[in-house]
Length: 188
Length: 188
Image 1 (cartoon, rainbow over the protein chains, first blue to last red):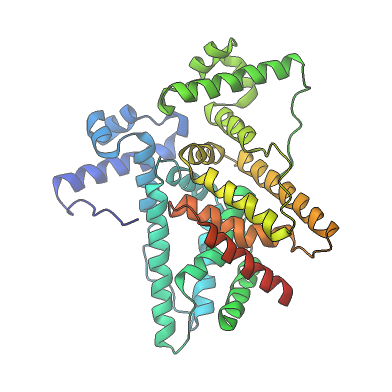
Image 2: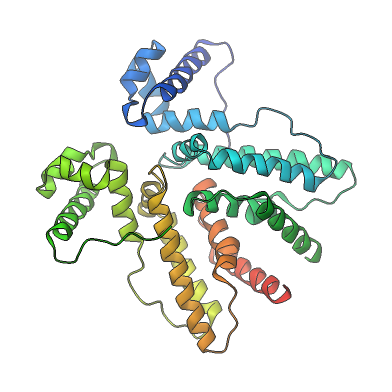
């Protein structure tokens, strides 16, 4: 699913979005999830509830949007000198974040909308991220596996573990998944 | 995570649970998710809202419980004569159900509670189901792979596809995942 183009930076629409997102993040710090309602958020952001309904549809849509923004990678990943090192450094941090209480709340929000639009955006961020690690690997002369194989063999079991077994994948498990994937990639 | 023991069948507690579950299922047919509230459900079930809060904590907990009950496999799987046939018959139906609109709504409900208790129960049902297919396979003289490998290599990418890319895994994809898993299982 393609990423929708966001509002023009600095425009009125972008300012409304920033204010509403900020209000949600503040209120999430201050109170229980059950106490978050569209009117409460609108009051804090200084907009009308109908502005929120028009733009985000409902509370679940707004929460998913805020969670997705937090999941967008905000920095160029560290160069560890190898594709294996780069991927494991990123995935270890990703697993820790997603398995934490705030990470789980983000995942719930992201998966909380009808068509999983937020979840699809997360998948997009993740694939872009892996692609940038692959480009770097190729520049070093490595032969990284396709993005789809890495998602299928490491990201999918990592998220299944967090969502369906309530376990935090260990660094050892991630290493084992990576090494088995590379072995199979070479033999295909 | 272990499955909590349910109420004694036929007891007062079991009758309350059945009435509340039935009320939720009826109301889900009749109206929007946003219109489902604990007081509305309590009225339909003929119990007080505090009965529901005491037993299920909140609306999300109740919806997760109802969704989990629907995901419990309700029949002995068909015997197709081989482990491959049995697994693919089950997974093709499972993927179709989970990717449908009601299936997606169930997954959302199941993943909607704080500690993912409902999701852990689903993982338990699924592993029991695979275990019963493995026992049948061993009785035939086959050497089925461990449950954990099947979950990691087929179930996890299947659910990742549904939740994060909004795609329905095809029968061809499931076959390819199964055959690759068996190949790697033999070479380990």
